[in-house]
Picture (cartoon, rainbow, N blue to C red):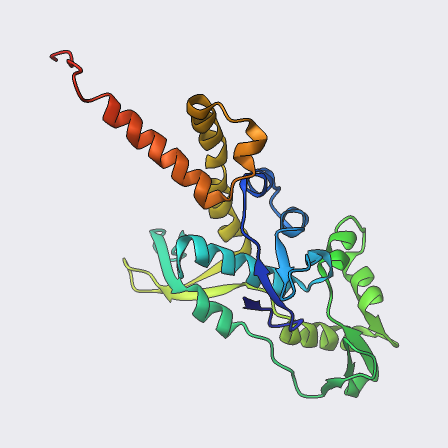
Length: 263
């Protein structure tokens, strides 16, 4: 179970199958792609599917990070280059520690408003809510995305100073996992700061792994002659186990009594 830090919702990934793997492998980079993938793949504590479009971006980031941890482990490597000497740099860090460092906090001067989900910025006498994934996806095609997002999520008179203040408050209350990661260059020892979008980097890895579903279906269908839908309906670990067994058995059958040509 994953406790989503911004919304407070308890969520979990339901057991994935081949259909989920195909959806993931074919998903587009960016927020719209991950929202489409998460729909139906994540449920609440009662088993009811969650609508990812109604989650803050930071909660979506945490869900993807938790999936990557389950599949590949907690250690993550971000790649970049040293600005001083140009050498390639790998920064290794714990995803759990990274998420903990980026946890939400309430800044001074921000108090809960009467309406659930809304906050009051006392100094500027305005109220606001945290932007949801649906808000961000919608404004992507707007000629003035920043102004439209503020119009959606802020009530009251917003001047330049108030806009900056409310954006800082939103970033503190609902942080994403896209941030700078600091380290040192192994060659020259200079400080290195990498701009790391953890959600998208995790999804690149997960998409690559999910794409093995096509090889699995081809292998299992070739041996057992099951239909594509029957194979895709298997839970992913079970399908991969069948594929691994077939591949191993094929190697074993090729050995006994087979005379190999002499090189």
